[in-house]
Image (cartoon, rainbow, N blue to C red; front, side):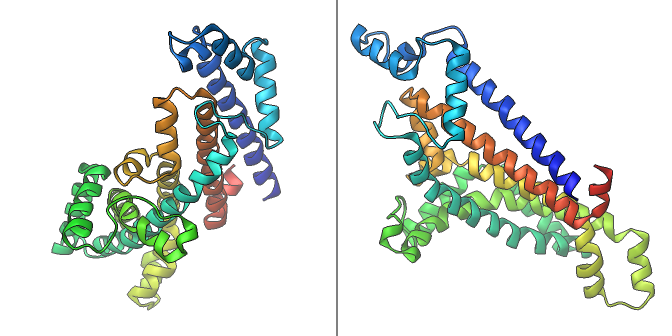
Length: 315
């Protein structure tokens, strides 16, 4: 197990190193003046020179890259040109919205998808199975921002149960803050639940046909015990893969939903950094998102080893 973990940690670090180099090359080394891109062609020469000095553009590219990576390793980030505050402060403020939102959406997706996926698999060819498949088709076809708009019109405007937009902040109370995230979480969760339900159905169907499941039934075990003790655990490997990918997507891909609900999250910060050409913020945010995705994949690999020891020995 220790060898397995060591290899995965080394792979994680190597991936982050390659990703940081690629981000740096794309944003700062490719042809073009990064400072001129941020300020525009009408920028004054003294302002342009000050920004070049702030970004270290007068130094060699390798020196800037090592300084950036070394600063991040020491917990030091640059200062946003747009906001005038450290990027770490901006990210911590926005992550306090994006992370709870992603977790809520993931929990909702799992709670909805796994039971109905198992129900469809155990009732194959029935009305329930067709209903679950129809739900998954609709959920995968309709984009999450459309769910967001419909939920605002119905639950916020028509019924008045939830706020239509905005985030009161955690200082207003945990209950009030979480209540403002319910509709965005549902909008993010429904398309992901549709995908996960289909994967769960397929994985459970494949497992139901295994020899050890037939043996468990022949030994007289009840259908519920066979399903939860034998079938679900062995079907968890593909399900865990999708859950990990979905969590990474929910962290990095919630830009549109955060814009619809006017949430001050990490996705909205990314959109603002792009629109305002704040490459200092954009560079750190992109690396953070890549890091989160890599860490989630690392945790999925660990979950593989826990669920199925054969994956550990094969690696």
